[in-house]
Amino acid sequence: MSAVVTTVFVLVGLAVGSFLNLCVDRLPAGISVVRGRSRCDACGHVLGVLDLVPLLGYLWLRGRCRFCGSRIPLRALLVEAVTGALFGFLVWRYSLTPQLAFALVYAAVLVLVFVIDLEKQLVLDQVVLPAMALGLAGSFFWPQVGPVRALAGGALGAALLGLPYLLYRLVARREGMGAGDILVGGMVGLMVGFPLVLVAMVVAMVAGGLAGSLFLAFGHKTRQDPLPFATFLTASAGLVLLWGRPLLDWYRGWA
Image (cartoon, rainbow, N blue to C red; front, side, top):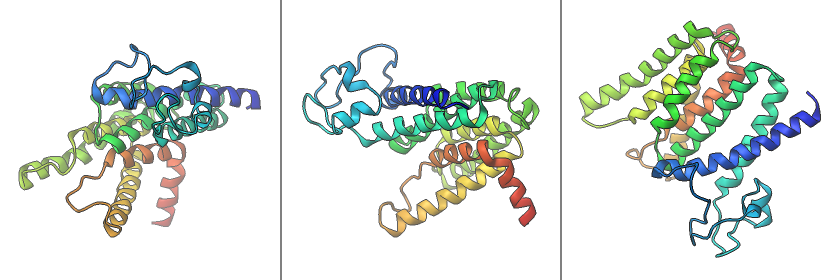
């Protein structure tokens, strides 16, 4: 892939990352992402074009609103940078193919679900349900998945998270995880298919367990505090989409 094409996709990714930041700010609050101009969260001043230039705007403003001096969340910079890097990597990995189109949308959706769950501990139906339909459609173009494996993966992913959800509700009389995590399990299963959904689940559980242990050890969380599992599951889904088959083959050879 030429450097020019890669650069174009990086720039597109930066712009998409800027839009994802808008979605993170507005969707949990039920605010439209297509109407209304962007404003500073602190002073409410309408932002200009220079304020909204992806990546460079944040650096130029040194991470502060130029009207009131309030800090712009570092998340704004990170989401734009990560999305731009992902788009550049994906076009290098898949070239200009139908698979690339789905990989780019998958990346945007996974970043969005990751950040919203990390910040708000929310999984939004209006994001995940369309992504599930997209995962099924993408299975027709994704090698080694196909619609049958996608449906099996979606059902298994939802079931693996639905079972502990029901057990907590019936036995402990409380929610051990959010119902939205079940939808994310189904979404990831549709994207990666069977049996790679099992790899995604294992990676997410190991990563979540390690993170939870570290949070407890350093006093950042207690045993009663929720852990945003969808954050770990979306991150593992991205890993499995790219390298799931080698991971599964490695495990089979090691086992």
